[in-house]
Image (tube, rainbow, N blue to C red; front, side, top):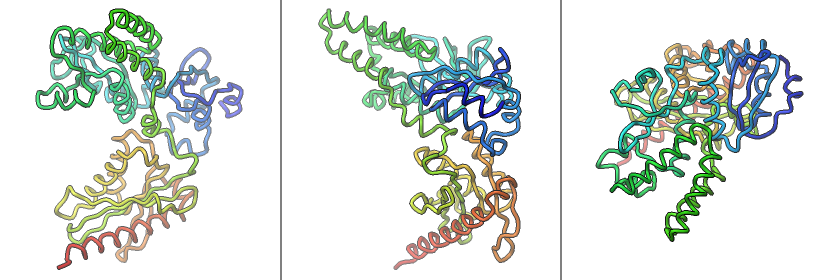
Length: 409
């Protein structure tokens, strides 16, 4: 398949789900913030570096792209999960073991809970978890754990639910006051919560129109019975469903690179003195320009002794939780095989297919070799060396400042 074929498909600049097909067979299903921009990315020159050879093979075999629009990115995320479950496309299931995918589970019982479980922890035949929790329904697979977490935050504001944390006696009142968990004291309120859970299930089944119809009916009945507080609450739910604010979901989308900003390189380094005053830094280059406004510093808290790889794991993990910073196109680590391995492990944990390069130093801390994605080294060698040098300079300065501050009388 060629990029011209995508242009012919005339995909819109809207959220939705796209299908790579070979004849009538669905090869791959994906979600998009912008169907047009997302599908164009499959024909970028660095596709093999960013997505791997399996996806390159899929694009080569496909002959058409079709799509289905949604009202929001949140609904695209849910639709993608439902369609992957229904069609089990070869390149989706081969790209990642479905046992490590996430599922939203709803428990059986008088007060249903909403849980997130890995596929490996669910017995789909008996409908139970590895902890012997009995499930009434489950939804998925969801390919991005980070995005699912953000999605549940959005959904919970519309349909508050009980989860494992809020079900604890010491936590329940706190969650309830935040409006994240409903009041389930008494039979009447418990019945109302079960109705809300039913709507939650419909939402995960992609049946928003059914929910809207039912809520409109309930609102009219509440108003007729002069239960104006209930009617007002339902009206707010209807408004939220029609105006889903999923900006947090956009920011957490691993497929979104800050395209207003260009190609983003992030370099990391750790500095300390025999494990004391340990700090880490991130330096950033965007579209060939050093962007000091994007630099970040980290005080390493998890270690009292020298542990460069452990420190790198900590700062990279903490950085990737800040989805509002955008996502890197290339990660540069200072060190050898150990640092390269740790960086890849953290990126895999966050399900980010980002190439990694490590810069190996000699005894005088001068660059002597590169490890990792050699295609990226060939394309961006100058930039990699510059940002690695920047990271080292920045980390040393930060470490000295911290050390001097700690020695002040």
